[in-house]
Image (cartoon, rainbow, N blue to C red):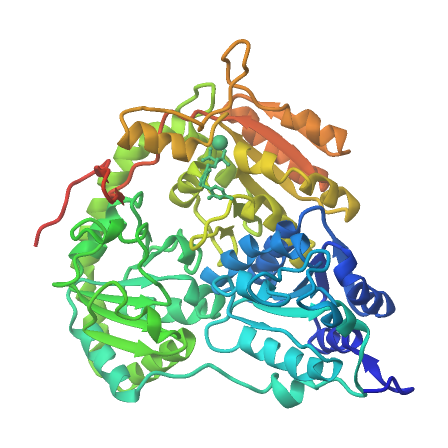
Length: 600
Ligand SMILES: Cc1ncc(C[n+]2csc(CCOP(=O)(O)OP(=O)(O)O)c2C)c(N)n1
Ligand SMILES: [Mg+2]
């Protein structure tokens, strides 16, 4: 197609489409493969901001957490070959946690396909980045002529945001960014903006679900992130209060209900509190909303720890029928958008009698649960006042939770610190505590907090991350400075890949190898001095060894409104126990820290 006066090239069409979709930021890293795209971004720099980072996975994690906080998909840009090969970890993370972002990846020129040009993956198939990420994203589009770009960009966007959302790759050969594409960009309002996937459940199924809930003696609602990202938190609260049903959450559902609400039951997990696991495993009806029952939620599916299904009768509602009956048999499985389903249930309840009776009948069940809660609270009480150095991890989580204001966003990384946080933080809002539960890549929180701060410039954004993950992604320090992002890193420094060392201790008789960091001369625990590393980047950095100092340091960091790093010396000898268990097949299973297995 000739390049006429009004003609846009491929890069311009992509950027124009992103602007039309009101994408505020693109996050990424340059390479020869994407300079054509950068050139199109350059022209539109008043309309869309380009953020340059120091590792491609950081860009992906930023786009991911931007969505989790801001509710809007953004885009990334990476070069051909190695530049884009640094991205799949972030793609997979978003894919498994159903978070959309558009990855614009560069590739070699179409004229060089199959010639083994610099950075071409050519030995199985030409320009074969799509094969690399096939398992890591929802779909790959690869336009190989300029005039294929308009179709590819609008379809890529639609695939990303409809149904169960997820990241999509738009893989663009070098020449296509600069090749004539179209005189006009597709309009979101014609192709994507007016599509709704808020599908309701089968009406008979809604009636049946309401019948089951009204006749239940010991019901529990279990929520996952479908409730959070589906915008269903307000309706969840309405239903729970209307029928007085206690609400438990998976780690990904944390914050869907204010954890201080009287009906908030807590986390169901291998390390979930007794009242949550015990109520769920003794429930007669379990209403599961937007949750996928993974092994960590379900105590590795061993009956009697997190759930006992059957005899518990499961109502499982999800936008993706693939997740229904994946792991547990269902008394009722309903494919639906969770918010629409809740509207349907609330409307159906309007036409029912005896609601007050159903709610009042719940008193006994809620009292029983309160008894469990008291037992659990007595069990965990000592950890809150431990004043050891290194800091007791429960105390550390508690101090962080106490100091953070209600509007703070805490982005956790992956590791033992995450297990402590999900157990001992009390989030008030759906985005108060963000974590990765599907792919679990180290670096998610270290880098994701930057995306959170872009999405919520006025809110305190804090990453609690392991020393292992921080060192792996320390380039974020520079990005915080370059973009003036007042993020706070609390490095949970236990001088080890402690979660993995804990497994060697728990399951392999303490045969520790390759899981801690030691100085070769002394054998003493070793790490770089993260606080001075931060200072060398121009960021405030402090060390703390005691719990009270951790709280003070966090207060000072919050007050500074500048990027800040707190290197906290935290004990690694304890793991957060709960009422559930985790099995490593072939090696055995952990024992619950409290209570035992429930046998109906
Ligand atoms: C990129 C990546 N590599 C390896 C792992 C496996 N892994 C899970 S947790 C963990 C240890 C993390 O250590 P650290 O960041 O210090 O956190 P801690 O468990 O000590 O809190 C490792 C290696 C992973 N999840 N992601
Ligand atoms: Mg560690």
